[in-house]
Every structure is written in C-alpha cells, then in structure tokens.
Image (cartoon, rainbow, N blue to C red):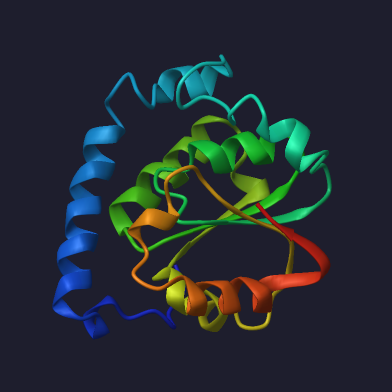
Length: 166
C-alpha cells in the first residue's frame, strides 16, 4: 500500500464510511453475489465478469494500463487483468484490498495487478504522476462521491493523452 495515504487524516464522516465498507468487504467476500470461488474458477455470472456490454464499449484492453477506482474487492479488476490489462485497483478500504489481493493470488494474476489504498480524491497524489490508458469505475461507484468536479479533475490528471474514462 502507498505510504502517502494516511487514513488518520480523514474527516469523521469518511472514517465512518470507510469502516462500513471494511465490514461490507468482509461480508461480500463470502456471498454468492460476488462468488469469489467462481471468480477464481473463471466462470461467468454475478461478480465473476464485467457486465455484458462493457467489453463492446471498452474494446480490447490487452497490454493497456488500467486504473480501477473504487475497486472494492477486485472482481472487476480481475476481469480486466484476465483480458490482458496491467491493472491497478485503488480503494480506501484496507479490508477490501486484502480480499482483492488474495483474489488476485488465487486467480494467478498477482503479477499483473497492483493494489493501492487511498481515498479516490487522493488518487493522483498517491499514484505520483502515473498515467493510464483507461480509468475504470464500476457500476454504482459515483453515487458514493460527495463531489464529482474534483473527482473528474483527478481522473483527467490520471489519464494518458487519448486515454479513456469508463
């Protein structure tokens, strides 16, 4: 995890939100909704793959650098890595990232994946000038953000010229 991120600097509302997501990460790791054994086995279904339309909309990601913001327990990040992307999953929940890291190892993809703990609003700072071909955010992620304007500015900073936000 990146040493530049200090959860102790978080406002109280963000600490409460992160703690709730820590609890959800532990719960989600054991639910059929995320079906982590199915993800490891490479089966399709809820939590095991991208949504059916995303491959068409994203196009090939083989060989691309992809940043997955708010990656939670990493199922979509794994799906992108399985398509040949070099992936970075970023989330503010250490518990979610622990599940994601274990999932990547179980899938044999740990060498193609990196996990970074940070609040999404600090992503450009903790990733220290890195740029990505694709910045991906999963279904339902934006609704948790209190302000989209600074988020969009950060995404812009993280994209390579000609890069894509999905």
